[in-house]
Amino acid sequence: MQRRSGVLTSTLTAGASSDERARGRVLWQVAPAALLVLLFLVAPLAILVRVSLYATETSFSAAGGWSLRHFGRVLGDPLYLGILGETVVYGLIGALASLLIGFPVGYALARASPQARRWRLAVIILPLTLSLVVNVFGWLVILGGTGLVNNLLIGLGLIGAPLKLLYSREAVLVVLVHTFLPFQILSIMSVVAQIEPALEEAAACLRANRWTTFRRVILPLAWPGIVSGSTLVFILTVSAFVTPRLVGGPRVQMLGSVIYEQVLAGLNWPFGAAMSLVLLALVLVLIGLSSVARLGTAARAP
Image: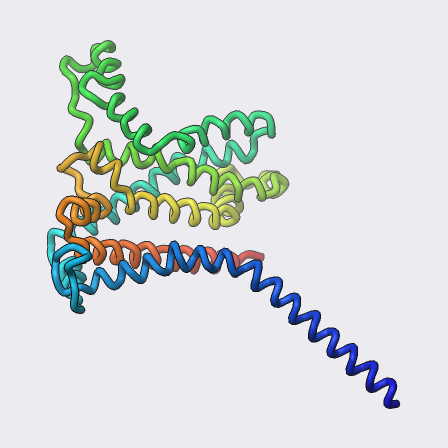
C-alpha cells in the first residue's frame, strides 16, 4: 500500500513538473510577441492618450497639465463635427460602393476554375503591390485637365473643353474605392468559395429563381465576408489622409488630413492626439458592431 502511494505521488509530481515546463515553454514563445505589442502598440497609445490630455496647445516637449478641453473642442466645435460627419459619410459610401462592385467580382472569382482564378487574382492584387502615393499620382494623371479621361471625352466629341475632375468629392471617392476594393473582393471571395455549389443547385431544383437563391442561400452564408470586407474598407477610408490631400485638395476635408495638418503643420499635438483618439473610438465601435453582426449570423445559422 505504501509502495502504491509512493508511485502515485511520484506520478503526480512528474505530471505537475511536466505541466509547469509546458507552461514555461508557452510563456517563452508568447513573450516576444507580447513585448512587440507592448512596445509598438500599448506604449504609443498610452503616450497618445497622455498628449491628448495636456492643458496647453503647444508641442509635446513644452506641454503639461491635465485637461479634456481638446476633446471638448473636437466634439463641440461645429467645424470639426462636420468634418467628422463627412468622414463617416465617405466611409459609408466607400464601403457600399466597394460592396456593390466587389460582390459580383468576388462571387465570380470563387466560382471560377483554379487556373482562371489565379491570373484574375493577380490582376486584382496588383494595385496593392504599388505604393499608395504612386497610385494616387496615377489618378492625378488620369483625371487631370490633359489626362486620359478628358482627352478621351474630347476625342469622342462629347465635350468641347476639359472638365475639372480633380479636387472634388467624387474624385476622392473614386480613388478611395479603387484603392481599397481588393480588400472587399478578397473577403467576399474567401467566404463564397466555402459555399457548396450543391446548395444553389438544390435551390434551383426547388424552382427558386436566381434572386431567391441569392437572397435566401448565398447572401446569408456570405454575410460574414460582407461584414468583414465592408468594415475593413470603412476603416481604411475614414483613416485616409494622402488621397484627400492630393486628390481632394483644400475643398475636401477628412479627419485624417486634419490630424496631419494639426500635428505637422500647426504643431498642435494635443489637439491632433484628441482627434486621433476620437477616430480610434469610432473605429473600435464599428469593429464591435461588426463582431455582433457576425456572431448574430452565426447563431442563426443551422
